[in-house]
Amino acid sequence: MQIGKYESSGSTVGTALTFLLIGLGVGAAIGLLLAPKAGRQLRKDLRRSYDDALETVSDWTEEAKDRFEEAVEKGSDFAKEVRAKTEPISDLLRRS
Image 1 (cartoon, rainbow, N blue to C red):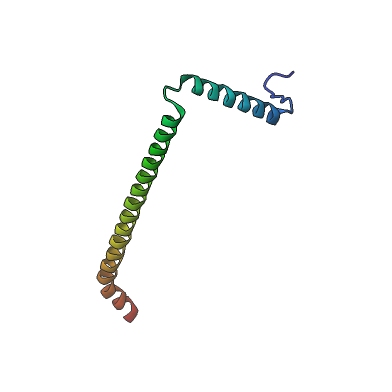
Image 2: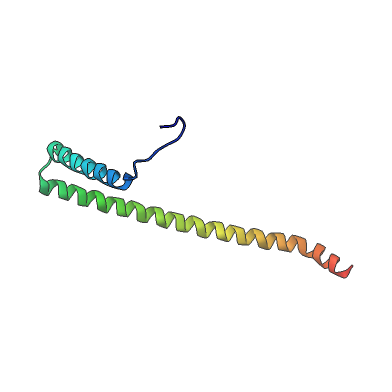
């Protein structure tokens, strides 16, 4: 082995998949052991949380859409204002 060079073993995908599966299994086991609620109650709470998250995302989407429309309108107004102010200069330059 040389100093400063990395040597891979060649089976990184298999090793990563193995560790992923082990981690998932351990996490699921710990989650089941530490779950403070019954399955039915847990599913009801998960459904409520999911619905709340969807509502929040929907609200954010609507707010972002409104802000975008506002920005487009302000940009359009600004462009019209600049065009109106520069039109005399543009006409003057065209005549020259």
